[in-house]
Image (cartoon, rainbow, N blue to C red):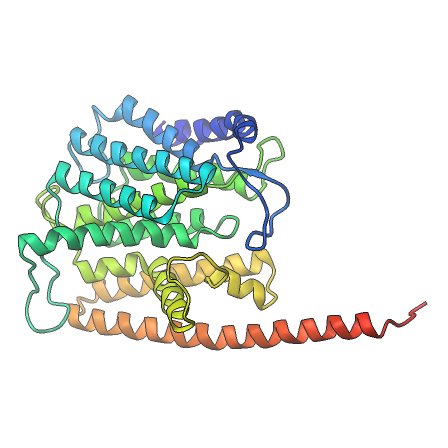
Length: 367
């Protein structure tokens, strides 16, 4: 019932909100970084949030959510997510400054931490030197940083039709495999809403207009993922730790890998690490000449392989220090492959440009 309502309500909201968004200018227009055709309404994230809001109002009093959470905790999640949706809408429409976005996202993180007294203070034995425990004054900003980074990592990955929606579905599926918890209100509703959104985003139903998540949607999904992850890695919620922190990083694999590599590449090139450009993994595969479908399949395969690796290590009771070392090794391998791929892509782009100039200077009559 919950999944059916979320699925149908998301489709209806996308259908109903798309013409309104177009009139209000809440659309994504093509430019040098965006290759889609026409202006696309940015209502996917709004629709998903409305589905989650309605489901919580209907079932939140009787079902404590994903992890047997208290109702007040679900409403804290919902309130914080709503703040990010409003922020995303304003950013999509008015292009807010970086400082405004950063301060607002930090404010949401502080709201979540203060409302739930949620702080990640025990990082486990990831270094092999004993458990690393943070003091109260250090765990507070560290938890804020985690929330901020994950929200923006998922936001940065949203650059190809279907990509972020599928990656979040993979993350939710892996979340339950890792934690051993059964699906609950939050993950059931979000998963069903994402399937409905993908129908719109991928153009699978002609009667449903194409839509994008927008910053409202990508940041909402990033927040939901990090909130769920913190809830099972911190004993403050539910009084049980279901996952070691280092194992949870595998759960968030590809978005964090992409964000870290892109940031390092920008710094190496002398560019601002927070300035948007065309250096993410989806931009790379396009530069290599892969079709949209093949690029999507390849990225999602990578996105699924990192949590799968972490799951196998966790199920084998691999020591946390080994998990950490393997994770670092995986990121180094990812960075090497990406660097070489970018080198090939740049050579390919140069050759295409040379061929184009040659054809323009030496036109031939093929008649």
